[in-house]
Length: 165
Image (cartoon, rainbow, N blue to C red; front, side):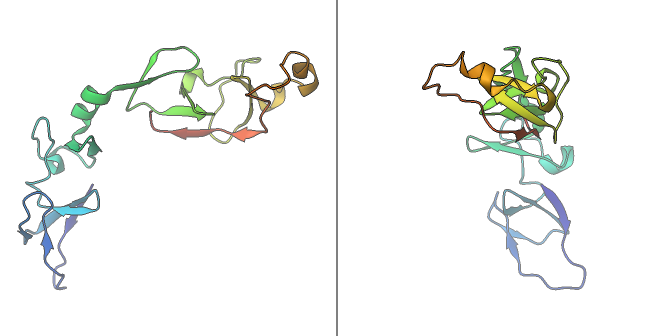
């Protein structure tokens, strides 16, 4: 969400508000979700707070426009950590690997237990994470894997950090 001031001496085309449909002639306007809004029209669908007054972010999900508090209240637990199994709040940063989601503290090497951070190289073997130095030897693993294993030893990957699930 961006709070903008209409240009001082520069004529700009009149904009229509996505909320009320009226012309925006106010000194300030908001730009959110690729549309322009009067500051009074961009409101949380749940608590009806004017979003420009309570922060610089808003969330959109299920056709609703939400403040941070209502987004977390409605969609707060949207996944479970693949290591510890506990829920991950929607506003928490996470690590992702092969479609799985992890708490930052849980994204560790299975051998040395060192935490992996964005940019670290790692190996993902049969659902287990190994740092670059503790990669299991493929020869040792091959004797324990069935011939048509659906989750083979994957090549080196880089850690990427992102928002919650």
